[in-house]
Length: 57
Image (cartoon, rainbow, N blue to C red; front, side):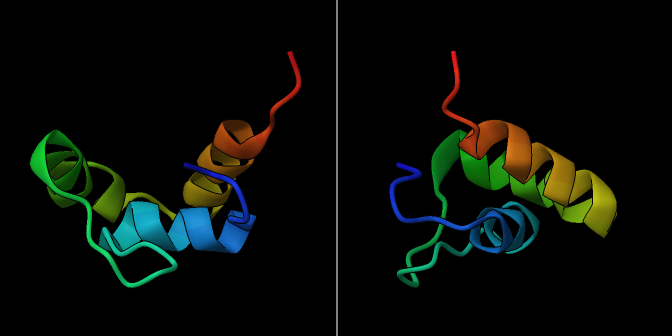
């Protein structure tokens, strides 16, 4: 899912539920945004995005 996504893309999607292609999160992920990540600070969203996009094992 994260191929081609930037940290800003991921942070925006976690806040808004809208992906870089304009699609929207659905199902359980929509609830995560509505009741959770939509309320996080920019710093927290950027930290989460960085973690999620870090492909190091």
